Length: 260
Image 1 (cartoon, rainbow, N blue to C red):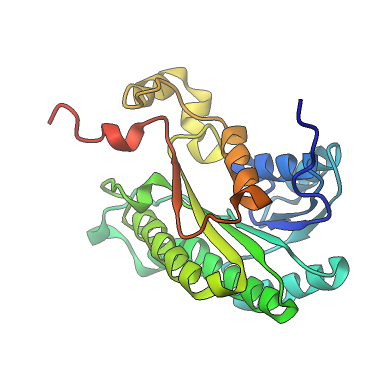
Image 2 (image 1 turned 45 degrees about the vertical axis):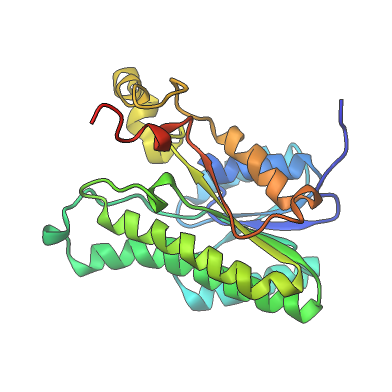
């Protein structure tokens, strides 16, 4: 059994890590020796519980972070850098779900909220991280949690689809710009994962089974499965990997269009 801690002496900031995929990544990183910064936006009590769970496996602190707020990102990341001496790994996980509103009925505020959180948040955090790593003249890792919807679309999900497609090309552009400095940038694109974002499928077996019929592997994914891939991308094993999206969807994307 491999007992090597792949992220020993590394510090990782994971946005939206008080639940779901972000929490699973925080736990996996802590297990592997990282100092973990657990970030939350609104539910402090839940965040404290998440922190305690992560601390069972390693070192972690908790911060409030609004990724859609440029000034808050700058301030909080500076605080973390000062306390830990640096941030080695950034996981842009924080996001909101699609509104379910057709474009013709969607107001600007709704569209803006999704774009600012999902896309601008990734931009704000990544920019600060790059400036920091280049200032230290040291490599680093950026991992974005996007979605299969960076490629495939669903009616009534225009705000979400646009934000995730934007993250795809933002990641590719950043990867080209920072490769000379040893900074790796990649996306993980989950399909149907059993998290609070898919709460109906979590709570209602009928809803879940109906959706799973479209998945070749026949089931929804688990948050920890995304975390295992994130660990690989954060580790030295992925030093030659950049500019890529890793799809984890049980085959959903390659099944789209079957029977047409």
